[in-house]
Length: 311
Image (cartoon, rainbow, N blue to C red; front, side, top):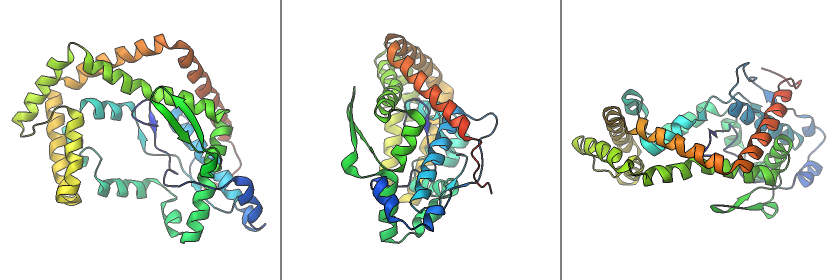
């Protein structure tokens, strides 16, 4: 889920859409149906709740995929998009050393390396032949005809209604339709707060100080979002290798200017104030979201003791 609430990066995100589970299960052989998922690592005692939910969702999906003949590894996710990452995207980078090393993290060369290193199923999925890959994709995300359409404040949201991912989320959260609706609401909180920040009377002065600093550094940009967009545009203009060097340079300038002007510090203070105001004004949705998420965390905690093979 994205720049809104803590966004979680699941280790199975590279999988694509899938066939009805009942049909797939009936088609596999008895020998393949005996395959069980491998748990390579369990959640630590002080597990981050969002990462715990990612791990539990991956475990439940892997159980389901094992029933249709696919052996997946369930690993404790070591990559997670945090609220700090969302703040950086909205209000700029803050650590010049990190920015100079990794830029904004939008270069595909770095992303592919990180994905290969963090997803234990990367090699397995890439090893499938086209026919196996189609079956794998169908089994994971379900038949597109079964998709669920949910109306949100931002329009219609469409999610898979069958397949192993939908099965896992239903077991974890209960009503899939209700969870998607509540999760979409939670994910909208920070974008909505950001809009309120940029409309705040104090924001133009905060932004202008940062913009003038970026000008002195050789970068004419409107705001941190524009800075990232220009870095991404360079991929098409000069290629990935040169674009990465340019991305690192502009990200480092962004971080230096943020440090000098305290733009992010001041913006985040406003941002958090507006998030609190939205939550207070939409208390029923907030309470329902917390209740659903809390129940899912309890379910995830019960899964930790499942008797699967641990490498």
